[in-house]
Image 1 (cartoon, rainbow over the protein chains, first blue to last red):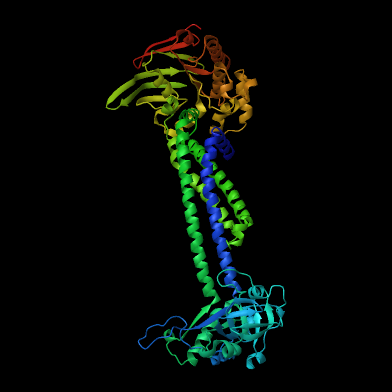
Image 2 (tube, one colour; image 1 turned 45 degrees about the vertical axis):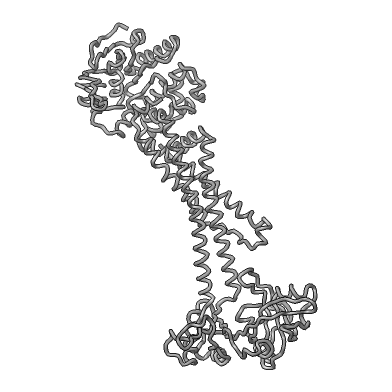
Length: 415
Length: 225
């Protein structure tokens, strides 16, 4: 018996009971649709998170002060020590011991009310040095970034992110205007190009000023605090070496011999990316597993219907055996019938799932809520189809085997 | 062609053993047309199942075309049924929702042989159903269904045609028509036919009558046909 004959027999059997076949297929269809769609949403979330993390700047390494320890060794929390200094930044920029670090910038953060005319808005102000756009991968849309002279002279100039511009200026050209941050006047000299990414701390909601000006006019009593140093490695592949070099330099400068006692911590873009990836992978797996349950339910539906079919067609099985069908022929016939049911259901489920994934972003309610755009991966399509055919095979074996083992005389006598 | 030697068959119904055949010796030669007769319970169905290789004897030997069938396994029996035996049943037993042509092709499918459609059409023409090849069983009369079943039995060119009460569900006219067809196959094509019936007038078409009672042969005589 060749495949063509087997498929023709299966089609015959399935067409004999169209409603029943369609309903059984629907079980698998819904299961596969759920798998495709939920995995696509999970993948979409992954892509979204990755894009956001990537938009923080490629090859970036963050250096934070470690948790300060009180006299009893009690941790006072992340970043509470004030262990980073401008001298540390200068040492990292010297490039003698750290050839893989392209540039390092100090960051001083200050929150504050920003006003322009009668508009006001709240955004964190970042004090830093002229290498900021290079290290954090920002492009200027308008105007220019501040220079080393601005830093030395503590000029009160700022460069704004798009979100801040949108909220304060409306249609007015911001460059050349004067805004007030915590009642101190600053002149806008440039605007960053949109970086994209939403949620998770938008990269466009920034106000950047010379670090000296931030220290002098905004952080006030807290003094010349550097809350983090941001360094960029020459490429993604040198990030690990750059991290080692930074650690060596800082341990040396802070005169710490035991690395476990370091008063600073490093985190690379890659670390953040790895964390984000492992979270989103887990999310995708959980979603896929939930959807997988419905596939199993669909499979049980197939088994149920195949058992009914075998019982109903006992006499036919007897006839086939009488005219020379071997066990294997009967087994193949019913297995193929089950697999055609599940495979067809699976193929339709993939089509429906892919269609829904494609149409979902067009629903405006979803688009505006930041719901991730589903990404249907070829792997999930191949896997879902393979799994649905395998489910037909698995849940078809028992009924098919039952059919194959029927005794021809008893089967022929069956009414 | 067919030789049975001391064939017995005992069924077990719970604890009780029911002897259905108690030592059958029978030889059917090539071109014979044998009617096996007997009341219900005489063992003729059991004998037909054994001759048809649907069942194996409890003891004794059954030689079909030089093969001792008694010792074969399920798949080998299926192969023998496919190649050497053509079944015609009382209730036709065509596969539902399947055209006459596909029904007749079926044994060839299981035999894995080629030229199926042509051979099936030929077999259907031989029984006078050339114009009904694409009809499903429900679209055929009883007599036509039985002729399609005979075509299916003949399509593999088997050693014997085994007909179990082939006219049991048919009216008199159709019965005569079917029996004439079988007679013709016997006389014109020298088909070996084993016919099981309990009707005397149907048995008259055969050239030899074997009568069973309580699992034993009580009469075996040639009739002047």
